[in-house]
Length: 340
Ligand code: SER
Figure 1 (spheres, rainbow, N blue to C red):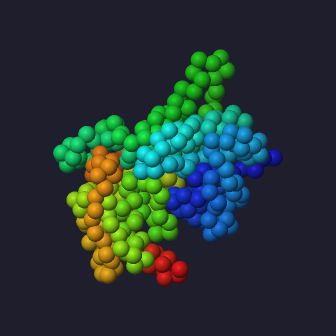
Figure 2: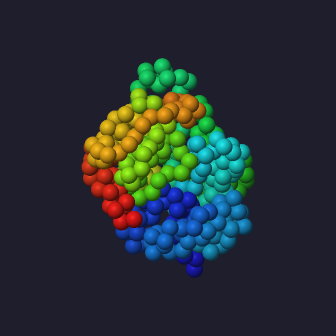
Figure 3: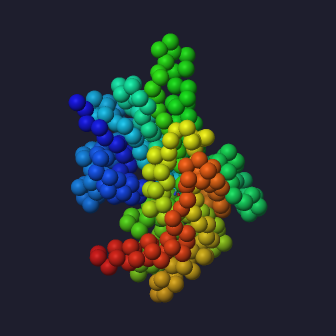
């Protein structure tokens, strides 16, 4: 008998850390973790098995199909928006071809199992693209089907992979005589900037938020790469993990769409800085906007509309900005740097 597992790609990343720590509380879930980097030793005890490898390695993925019965895939591996701009074609390979490999693996698993395989996909606010700052200031809360003209390779990749998920769920091999009854059950969440107390993001453009607070706690000066008036939606990791797990659990019939916005609080960079300074009065945070990264952030909405998620699967963040800082970020980050 093949072992029943939940596959998590990008297991060593920010969301991977949060998700694996969360799933450990559920003893029935055996996590098969995959990452191109070594796994953080703190996560090791919570994984049934860790495999260091590349999602572009189809031989490796083929071996997983043979060995495991994969019921759910959380496909978290991705190259974030700033890093992707330094080598857009390489980012495309990882973000798109990697996702295609996982979708194919999911379909193959579904055929073996005679039931659909759930495929959870973190998409992003980067899927949106507003033409200029004036538009950003006047559009208000952006809905899932609005302003989908991303300006980054990462944003294009995320938007296209959402479409691939839709294709594999609804239309895969639609002309084949033996077309599959059992395909995948794709569910995507467009995340705002995420902030974790445990890890720092690598290569994102919303990173100024988490970087400000981690630098303050560490006692090192920080130059914020966007203007003080820059507004973006953010969310803390416990809410991000909760949204993934809640969407996973939602009955298929209640879902009217495959892709959902979620959001929590939308401060300006200055409001973010002021809140950090309140907790760490000695923190040195200055502003030195980076022209190109600023442009990327200016093309992302200041606020997003998550009413579809609220309606269809009861989404509600547990942390507003005050609670996020007071009960999660400040105490946990302080603890992290005190222990180092
Ligand atoms: N946090 C991501 C980035 O900045 C957006 O999804 O690239």
